[in-house]
Image 1 (cartoon, rainbow, N blue to C red):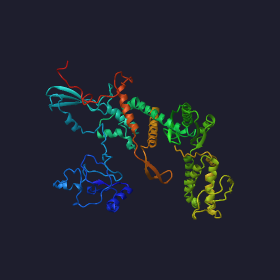
Image 2: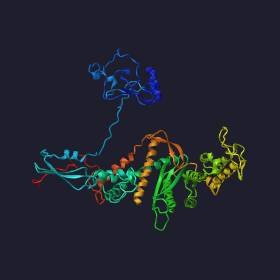
Image 3: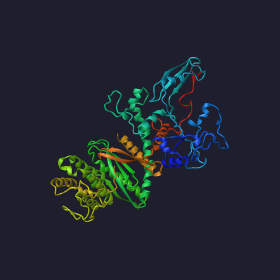
Length: 601
């Protein structure tokens, strides 16, 4: 049998060639198969090569001349006579887009190679309880102390009195570190899975499933690392490996950003801070800078709050450090590139820093936070009776606000006038803009949309209810410094223990930049769009989704941790003469040499 193509165009091409309606035959099914009698007969092989279009439908009695007949084609066996109706590994699959057998591929994916397996304890003992010297099954064993997730046993042959040790995981180099322990700790770190959140004796209350890995091991009665040992591996091996990987990717993406910026000579950044806890008792602050053109994280700074300073004071301090580093990198790469603008939130301390120490950099306010604050204020009143006339316009108001910011391309005054034009639009006035109350129009005179169909929701200001609702809407949208802040809103629409916090910051940056690098190289492509309900917007939105990422950086860190464990002893010093790659043998680490009890000297 041959699988039908998934493409509608290819299926139509097959339908014309076969003179049948494939869509009707499938009856709404997405997947279908075609009998081999519609294709030229070829010699059976292990592979399923791709071929040309199918032949026209032929009668079973029709003879076809072939150079190499199919094996067992004339067999009288019932099973073989029905082979056209069976799906077997020797079937050939044909591609209607190409002719001949030039491109031969396997239709199956290579099975993933595993390094670890979960094995029942009883099944494992059956495989181990025999003497490697005299092959006797009269063997006794004794469990030794577990080394994390590694189990060790001492075997004793009652027939030849030989003894030997066995361990479920190999040693890395000459250190006492077992490979399985480094794998568990590093894998948990790179996928963002907390290994444990409390001691075994503390009752867990309302904890996420992801925070119960240690409890899962205990419940399944699987040997596992203790919290203390896990932290030692993280501190000694995983954190340095993550730092090196992060630095490597950071240099690569910074070079890409600077090369792209050479064309325009300017760099537009966006920055935001994240704290380890909400409120004003945060201990650590992470500030990230992102290039709005490539959407890559340029640099990240993690700071710890001193005892005599507030948590909020860490944001401008982190921004200053990260900006200085980026400026130094630009000067060492190409002095012609300048930082043109930076998009931040409306924090007064950040604005004061940029005004005093970075005067050449233009500050924009984040559009998302600006619109979000206005949305929250409007949502609180939209269900009130006095707001009924303008309720259908509230969502359109926020959409128009985004449009005004985005199409003004950084011209703040133009953005304000486009936004104020909305209040004339709701009155069914679309041209001849001169003045709205005390606001004067100097840059625009009409709406930017095309001719519209009559809308029954237009407001009539001669109606007291409509007039009052419009007054409230205008007041909430323009009160205070809202229009002044709107002039500085960014057109780029950018959203955006100390070592442990720094490592998680590096991992998040690694993950984000790796996705962007894969999209840039073409290995991760857009697959389509999907909808979901946005809690912040309170409506259905559509987002792009891409092909699965490789996440190769995760495996790279895990392998790096194994190498670090193999060349570093317990005191943290490198051992000379030890190769980075550990031994890979059947009995080199797991099965130590058997030593007879009485014959050893």
